[in-house]
Image (tube, rainbow, N blue to C red; front, side):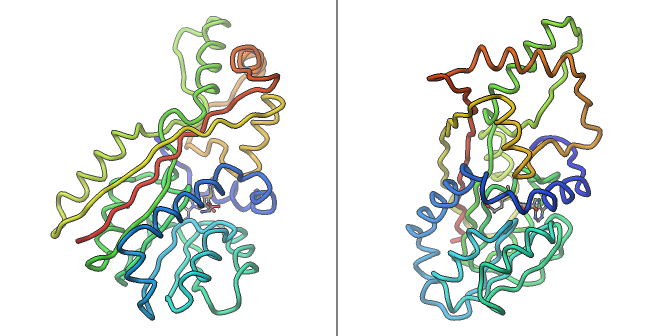
Length: 280
Ligand SMILES: C[S@@+](CC[C@H](N)C(=O)[O-])C[C@H]1O[C@@H](n2cnc3c(N)ncnc32)[C@H](O)[C@@H]1O
């Protein structure tokens, strides 16, 4: 997400939503399955699945959906899972057998990585970074030769109906300086340019591959959609996020309701971007 994320607020939001996350994280679960399919096809995965003690780092492990897959598929690997939210980690711990994963409650952007990893993996988390380029650079620097980093994030176009409805609502009620409400995301090209820039200063050769797609979800109402965002902790956590006036909110909901309908439901677009980086 573009902007200055208030990490204390973000942590609070994820702590508060940990109990409802699994029920509402439909899009994130589908992303996990696509990410797993991409990893399974890669040479990095084939290599480490036969390598006892392979070092694996998961970032933003949440309630442990991907973590459980990692320990099942890589039973001999040494897996570390990092998450900002202790409540999320508490739930992830319950999904895995004791002592199979080393859990760390921390902000990956602040962590000093002393180890080198064969696999770095992350689902639906990098959009919360304040320094996307610097953090990705740090992570890729920690990859072993032939190691791979596989991540998914959300790209520009995610929640496009919400942005559109807010822009129209501001015009309708006569606000002259249009503000951006709701989260904003990097365009896929901007994201890839940042990755390439980060890689250019590193020794060695890397290959990057990616896929991007639209996942259009339907909800019975705009409030239902906004509730689902809140229940996974993904509401705006930018520093100084603008307070939304009740009139603007009412207008936005009415415009959204009329303009983005399909078969009697309202639509919300998510645009996941999945990236593989392999160090050759
Ligand atoms: C949308 S959830 C995704 C969780 C899980 N990967 C999944 O797909 O279900 C994002 C997770 O990333 C964590 N997170 C966000 N920013 C982080 C950071 N800078 N360092 C570590 N964890 C972070 C949040 O606490 C949250 O649990």
